[in-house]
Image 1 (tube, rainbow, N blue to C red):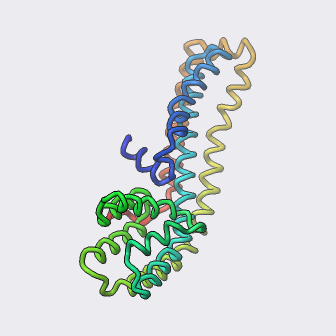
Image 2 (image 1 turned 60 degrees about the vertical axis):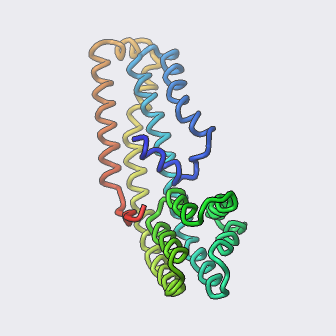
Image 3 (image 1 turned 180 degrees about the horizontal axis):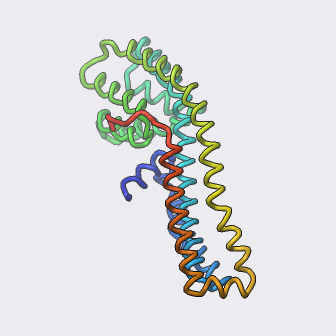
Length: 251
């Protein structure tokens, strides 16, 4: 779980965000305390805390997917920049430095990060290896591995490989975006359907007689069953609505 979370933070561009990590850890506790103070139903408070943690994970997933889509859209531009630099006999590090200085690319900060490592004495091969988890996409892994091979063994076929990668990404991108949009609507609607009963429970719990009912053994069992059912439903939604993406075999 820790490894998955660290990877997701990197893919979302939040690996260095101390503020997000603090909020991620503290917010569920705050929600538990607030709900417990309002309703004094510990199982409802626990459910609200779990729901808050789930929403934070959902935000992280959405952020990672959104950033991944943006990278996918601009990656052909990255490849064309590298291709142009190679045709102009510009060194690999200098071509990466040009990308790092771009004001129009989301990945500019990542290439600037790699160049900064090289400026501090880290080898280019090591700097390139550290780029892969920051992108978190199979197509980026392929490009980075190509750059590592070129750095180690020379650039024979480098330009042709970049041109082919750019064409392949553009061909796949449009179809993937259509599928992702449709699946996003389906998953979003299903998750709203899971959340709706809990909003009703919170509204009902504002009345003293309902709060006492939920605090009883039977009420607690009902809330516990609802919590388990909701967690299973969310898991099924994630599995059924998942889109097959290219696996990162070079990660």
